Amino acid sequence: MFSHVVIWWTNPEVPNAEELILAGAEKYLRPIPFLKAYHIGRMATSHRPVVEQSYQVAMHVAFEDKAAQDVYQDHPLHLDFVRECKHAWSRVVIYDFE
Image (cartoon, rainbow, N blue to C red; front, side, top):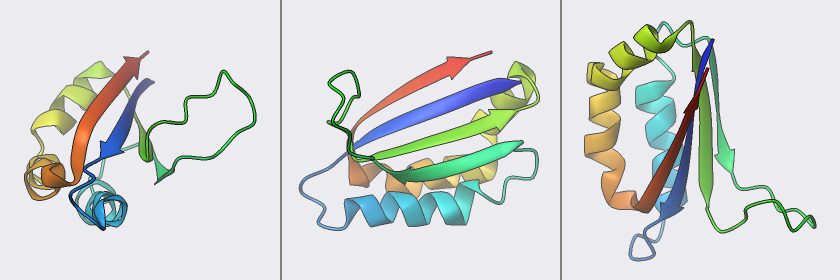
């Protein structure tokens, strides 16, 4: 399995940025047929100091292998998501692992 974790900090100049990212992912990313797992949501608060809490939205998607993730990166729906939603974030960090 190959996991792809995306962390977004929303653009403060876009009032509904969180919702735009969440809705955009549902519209463009969830339908990609070869995702093995898909989960997106808002940051969960925690009392634990080791838990990062400065971001607003995170997503985890899983693939059969890295080759499938490479195909995902160029998939038209993924490209549509980035094009339509990138104005809603000010920063994005990605963690990929096998």
